[in-house]
Length: 195
Length: 288
Image (cartoon, rainbow over all chains, first blue to last red; front, side, top):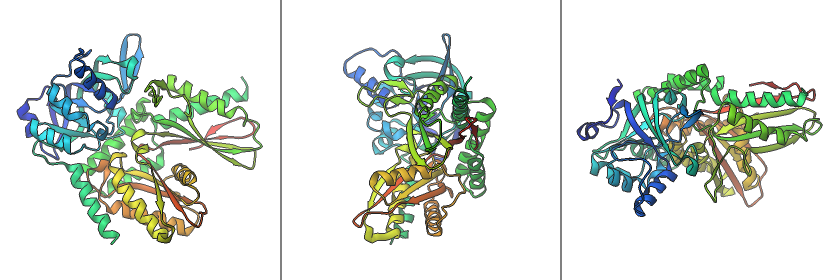
């Protein structure tokens, strides 16, 4: 059963999400990959203003595919990229911008896991490779920043989504991490097989 | 219009077809995987993948927003009259496809981080295999970054034999598969030199899903490794399940007495590949 979430979601609601819950999202998110994470933190360090306000917005690890028709952008591909690349920069960004939750694929590491617990946040896994379904869930492109500087996939896109999903809660505010659990179980099976 | 211009158009059409439509063998593989899953989360992942393949095809949308690094595997008959213009035609096809489909600009200068589109130094990647005859077969593969990051070069001790190769590849695949959009296709190149082992692994990814190696010993290795990977329980998108690998394709070359290099290449479930046949007549066709 897919639970339809309308953003912004309250802190209480996000903290109540549990591993295994399946959601869809309607509302505003921003996309950011490793270069954008680094760029955001650089700006913060230098005291520079950002061309957008990430405060309170969910971060989607995604490098969209977009087509420009005159001044209008149409997203023609939207889906998750590997989240592990953002592990080193995520806790600082979450703390600075009160990021309520993350969307990506493959899960993250111990630093992010701790940050999720500390902040009552969560990590949602999108189905990789499903860019066409994702494109159809984009209601509006609100803004794109650093397009010239970082290029289409690494730019920050601020999008309004309409029932984007299914998204599976795989890391929750209680410290559960489905990715880690599956990998540990796999290592036990493989370890036993080679003894 | 010359025959050359016509086959250039066929190359662009092949890239479009690979980008928006999942090959029938992979669709069948995902359906079989779905039949074998009992976990709700695993089934949801596979159902969403199949849904996406349908929506992409119906709407002419790319399957994945990562339209990949363009890679051409060329088996070029040395007697072909088109050989001289082929390298330029492959680059042009990528350039045209980037604008017309469009493809995501995904070629980045590693020193400046500038994204230049999909044509740059070394890109598209072209793998040449020169063979007798007058015909050229070109397989286009869109290679996603997530699965490319799962590549590995394993330098196995020759004394460990094929059992050692299987153990090493299994340990590697179990470690990297969760981030490579499983269920994956695993290419394994055994022997040769380090670079050849990786090239064999990559070339093996171009085989149809159900094509087993001609050599029964290699085919048995493929089946054993696939079963071992699937027993890991990593499952679709690494959320647990019965299917982690849709197929394993292996190939080999003779090795030096002191070394047993093993190349591993993974392709995500969104295995975008298509083959164009270009005979001497210049009347090219997309064959799969």
